[in-house]
Length: 151
Length: 151
DNA sequence: GTTGAAAGCGAGAACGG
DNA sequence: CCGTTCTCGCTTTCAAC
Image (cartoon, rainbow over all chains, first blue to last red; front, side, top):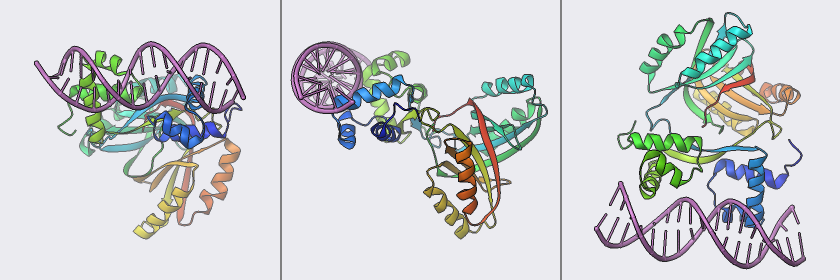
């Protein structure tokens, strides 16, 4: 924790994380400060990059993207050239909504979001399957969201 | 995709996903509509629950949460009672920021966020390790974020 | 869909505690 | 560091077209 952040800031951040469009009036009541004080703190948190940005959280099911899967990937080789090439290829696919480099039995964990299982099979076979340098793939289809973070 | 959503709505949603605080004036220019038309569409998308909510996306590193790990969990038994009990225990831990039920070699994928590796070892041994009914745990420490979705 | 107007809210500055 | 007051610009929500 950077030292410039106090308890009130954390309180504000928690509220802004849950509802970025909360009215300053309501937020100021919740944290027991004036509107201008809250407003100034938020500006400061934005400048410090503690608040990276604001996002609308969408309902993927209603948008026809009801199928999500985590895919673990192990590469044949972990030389920086191979890793860089893989990362580059990953960025091209809009179906891959997140990608992390990890330590462990696999090298990457991807999250793939598509319309349905048919589309997933197509993506898996025709896109993921064609990326060079993959030694091993392991798919975990998400069937339920028990808890979900934001960002 | 629900039929009430057209191309202009998708365009609006893309912008709102990237920047929920974009000015209606700017957004209306981008989608070539009047401000009131855009405002009405957004209200409609909120009512349809296509926009679930708005969130501030925070910088976890600056908030002292620089260590994130994906943990795959397999339970000893998949009876609904055991699964329900596990889900309940999961909800208690603020360190577990997301949890998905999955199909495949594991039953759950968790995302754990803590301060550093020391804290992670403590959490892993003293919290995750003490949850009953776990047959197998597999940890993937995130070392780099190549691509990151929102929500 | 569009305009235009009215009311409410937010950002920012100034000044005082 | 916080609060009050002020002003300006933006959003929202009407109406009428």
